[in-house]
Length: 460
Image (cartoon, rainbow, N blue to C red):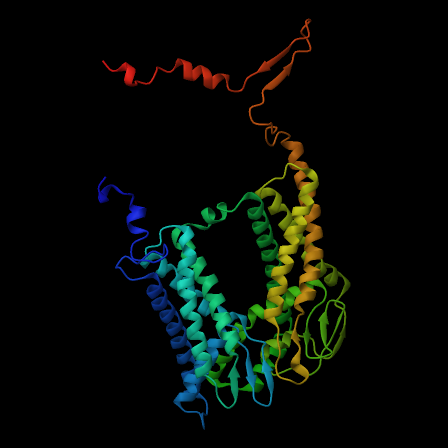
């Protein structure tokens, strides 16, 4: 057999790499391809943020801040986009960061992951993990280097958090981008076994309903407070360039506001400072920073919202659970009636875990004073979401699965031991005989009917 007759996967999928790692089409190792993509993604993000900081530096008074300060500020914003906290000298720690900025490095890393897969010799989904690692490791090293370079006498970013956040973001975003470059979403989801697939789709459905309801709730709250929003915006008088930058900063905090609204609908609500709370049962707030979008929050102490509005808001998590339970059963119906509610509750548990993580990242600290506690509680959001969404999903999954079983009584053939014969009881037979059917009879008849294979004895 010549080398040209070997399968293409064997000749191209192992060449140029160690330990089974593929090499790129031009002979470059996958690690080098990943390092190039990591540098391009980090450099593109820094370039965009540097332009924004430079525009603000030119438009606003910048006494005492030179061009090196502009570069350090851009690097600091780049780290903020990766949700890296800062320690301000004499003012505590800043951890309540805009989640919207994560979209910029996430989108760049998505494209970088696709580029690594296409330029590298990655042709199988099992090799996407190597490509994601080849991208994530140098990206984490770059994040750590920028954390060290952006330190100043005023602020110091967290070096361990920069390395970990950069690695995880590059691994997840780059891995998803690389996998999507090889196959569409439908095929990727179908690679999962039926039960994990139904759990994933049900949880995503519940999260979609919760976040959509939170977006509507936050938008409605801001729309009813538009007068206060305009007053705060006029009081700041940021100017033309400053107004654009202020708008971009508030857009970055929109995902935080949506998650806060979801926690409000769940019941526990959220806080904006020590000893404060905003919940459907009532709110108590102190003085707030002069950020226009905070006009959507009630000032001072207020009683609960109207009864009809409170009931409508508190019903949202249960609607999300109903939708999640319906998706769970519809994706993969369960033959055992008593197991379906357990899978529905598992859908609520996964949704609760995801909601707890989002709530933890949506809040944080704004210094060491009264604003040391801002945002929702992660563990409370996870627990309440698991109970509310899980119970609704369990009931819905049980009911819908029972209805489906009534409509389709024969889901799967009965499971019999291998090699056993089907028994047909001929009760109408006067002799009371039992007829045993051999399931392999058809195969034996086909083998007997087939012509004999030519062997040595058939040679002339």
